[in-house]
Amino acid sequence: MDANRKRIRTNIRVLFTANMEDLDSRFRRVSSLIASNDMDSAYLEVERIASISQGDPFVLVKCAALLLTMNRKARSREIAAMALETVSEDEGDRLQLAIALRNLRMTKESLYLIEGLQKTDAVALERAKTLLAMDLFDEALKILESLEGREALLLKSECLSLSGEHEKAIFLASKLTEGSGNYEEMSLFVANLIRAGKVKEAIKVADRFLKSRKNADSLALKSYVMRINGRLKASMNFANQALSADKRHIGAMWNMAICLIEKGRINEAKVLAGAINEVEPGSHLALEILDLCNA
Image 1 (tube, rainbow, N blue to C red):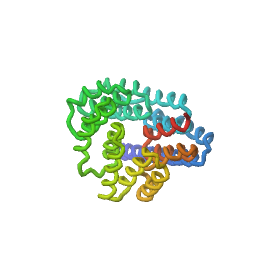
Image 2 (tube, rainbow, N blue to C red; image 1 turned 135 degrees about the vertical axis):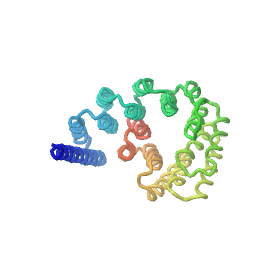
Image 3 (cartoon, one colour; image 1 turned 90 degrees about the horizontal axis):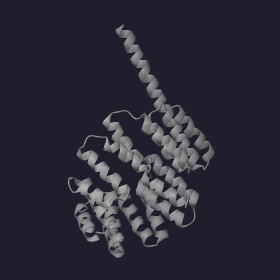
Image 4 (spheres, rainbow, N blue to C red; image 1 turned 180 degrees about the vertical axis):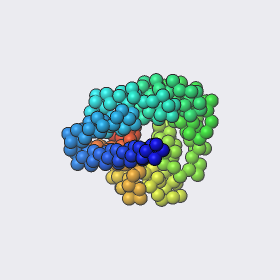
């Protein structure tokens, strides 16, 4: 009996692994089809993946993200709703799905999941992120006032900036990014400066960062400030350098895509949105690019 049970468990593991490998292969095929602008074939393949997902909410939400890449918004929401219906009662799974739904801009659905979770600091932080995504800055700040940790403080800085409290936002970001080598953190500091109308100061920050370390993060940040300053050719050059250092750098791909849209090269920008989505399924940056492409 024990040997038989062991054989059954082994067969289940082999079948599960084979199914996951098949899904990975199918998702790679979808990315390839999107890159070649064969959207009809890509759509059919995503529908096949959804049909064999066996109700796995995280496979479904990845399908929903890919459908947005193809500008199939209505079907994307239908698939995402299926993910919401099939998620387990496990709190970790529900939190991860809430994050994924927020990235897909289904903020009400994300908040619905979060409200049903235990009140931990991690859950409170995700609730603040969702409220920020809904432009409810004051409500997000109320939560962040009671939270500690670097991520909460960075989010607080962003909230302050977006709500118009520029000096407080800049001061907090400058303290948090002292000695930072992280693109996300440095781009927040630069964005705070730009929102305050301090573009020249933002350029100086990017220059100092590039001088201190020439890597994908600093090159992508330089690309960002050059684009904001209207220097598209320089921005694309720095983005290319960043991608030569790290071909999966989301910040560099995002900046390059925005430059391409400015130049009217929409299909190339959509390919970059698909590449960002492959690195980070459901990325809000990929969705921002697609919105601009379809405007």
